[in-house]
Length: 547
Ligand SMILES: Nc1ncnc2c1ncn2[C@@H]1O[C@H](COP(=O)(O)OP(=O)(O)OP(=O)(O)O)[C@@H](O)[C@H]1O
Image (cartoon, rainbow, N blue to C red; front, top):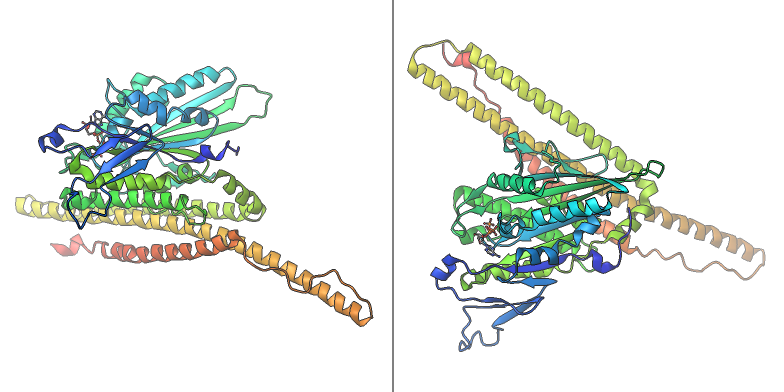
């Protein structure tokens, strides 16, 4: 790992984009309440505030917010790209991860900024174009390979947008601890036109539904992942391989489910979206803690698990928050501005992580690698078990079908079909529950791994303390012997060594509390899932059902 420059480099960049007023807002005779004041400042005015209202008189009528950069309806796609993302490319080809995400309520321009249109392409294509150009410029001495994948996270499930028929995909941690999406399609092309076509096609596969707030509202987070691998062309130089990833994410709308009059499926989606955005917000909050002492829990959603390396580690992050300028969207704009404002203070602590890791590296790398092997072994075992189970269930179904008496009576056939459907549905549900149990098992192992790290930090410190205490006691003993023999003067201190815990140990203790609660939460979730699995075992026996 290599260190990056000054601390400003590590800061998360937060940009704000105010989109033009929409036709619908104009039809509602909405007034404009959000304005860009200058390159960095934005003002939001409360449309409900009445200057003559005495009760509200001492509340300010407007609030200003500062961002790294602010745009309004006049900003072109190129300007937004240049000010937010272009600067990440150099880091990316030097081996640094980067993430750009578009945040904001539904219909405020996230997809427009990230994907754009054929005439006005957004950040995805502009970034890839510049990346390919930069690679070409340095390719005399370096050998590069770039691959791209495009996925969506919908209701906490991952789907490949370049190959939607592949079903739901799982997140896995590889042997180097990098989170990967198992079985995702990876495309290696450097033709920008081809990429735009692939992305447009992929975007059409996104789960979109009309909501009260937006006719074509994206109900999922879309993640474009670009992996850059580079190697020196020089054969006799040490063959260092660098690998960096860029995530470009079009988040699902952040509006609260209740505000869009959603019901049923929409409400469930809203809950999942809120859950992952809340998890993202919690990570942002913990990372922005000034003392750096808060535990960052990436495990609460697929999105944060996927972004783990990119948010907290050796990575640069850009958040582009989006709002509407209209009075009708005031509440949502205020929430978005508050969320983005809180994000501003994140600093990724690259150096600190390095110090911590190297300090303990000798003690716990072996333990971690043992635990990783254990996780891999368990995952493999569970995958084998579930595929064995699935095969035997399939065989059971075939068996059931084989046993069904061949009947020509349409009513009987209909009943049989219905029973078969019920069976299949029960098996499908079983598979779903098994999948969540497997995920809970993985999370539990990860928590265990983190717990071991914290315990090691504490054990190290305690060991060091008892060594110091023993040394001090031995010296005191020597002193008293010398005194008995009539010798005077001693260099050893009268009082025992200072046993105040270091910041690191205190943090480890705090983390242990959080991790124990987390483990308890996971165990609690496992019980109903296991019970459900048991209940879903079909008790249907065709041979005894009818004769
Ligand atoms: N800066 C802009 N300039 C011109 N049109 C814009 C701009 N931002 C958004 N729009 C238009 O506003 C509409 C909604 O934008 P978009 O679909 O990008 O919103 P979104 O935030 O991605 O919504 P959702 O979360 O529901 O998917 C689109 O028709 C888009 O073309």
